[in-house]
Amino acid sequence: MYACQWCNGILTISLTGLAPNAIYIVIMRFIQGAFSGYINNATALMAGETPHEKSGWVMSQMMTAGTAGNLVGPLLGGALSSFFGNLLGGAWGYRIPFFITGLLMFLVFLGTTFFTKENFTPVSREKMKPMKEIMASLPSIQLIVAMFITTMLVQSATMSIDPIVSLYVKSMMPGSKNVALIAGIVAATPGLGTMIAASKIGHKMDEIGPLKVLRLGLIIGAILFAPMAVTNSPWVLAALRFLLGIASAAMMPAAQTVLTLNTPSESFGRIFSYNQSFQAIGAVLGSLLGSGISGFANYEAVFWVTGFTLLLNFLIILIFASKKNTPR
Image (cartoon, rainbow, N blue to C red; front, side, top):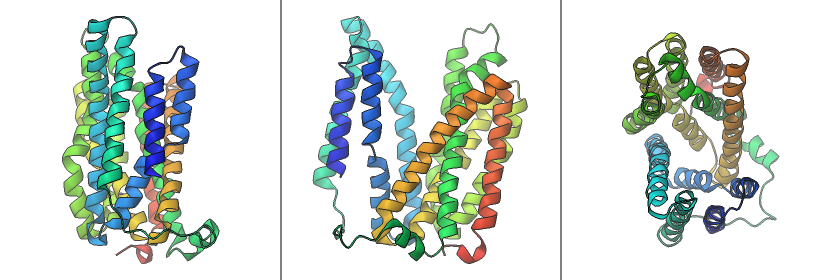
């Protein structure tokens, strides 16, 4: 499975560098998305191989790695495009980074193939339980569904702001020549907050339980969106988004940890695949939500609605993840 996914990624990303037109790029990206799933399988693998008393820390470290990649990737891509654009000229400045990315993915493919080991006994298709039977055997179906919804809403809350951050900063700084730089700083601050706090929050999850950390992260996140909607300073916005990044380290990893502690080992793959589907739905809904609300109303409304979304998620957790379902 890993080999198939990485070969797909290597081929599609490398071939995108040869794209003759925009339609070709869209098709390659669609194929890449259709066969993606490495992160999902890596998360399921880590969940299955990690002792339960360390699950919170491991899930948080996974998020730290992903966040670091999201921060470094655009910077590296921009730097490579600029360098090769000046060196080779023309469209090659944009094409070479795709080939380099394909090479990096090939190196990860080799590392995964030869250095990753797992204690796994394959189940034949005939003996594989149907999803309905797996869901019925779970300790708490309500809790699992609540985590699916949490993954969707948290991802939606994250993505709803991304399309408008630069424009929101620009509206605060009319006529300024440093909008691009400051908007970049504002956009990056949540990632920095997550990277700094994820490890400590992961340890705290292992101490007090992921549900408590999740509830705290959701309510803090919901509260932080209110001052973001009324501030007129990009630096205040950056500080608030930094705090939001810390709260984010208590959301998605906590939901994944709850799934880990409440899913039988033979069902990890399918449960986390469903979770990834909900995450993808959240990404689509969030982007549409942010762009749609900002077009229909204003940028401030996006922050209010997003905060309400996290508050709604908090209430869902209170209702469906009661004390008797706590995975400790």
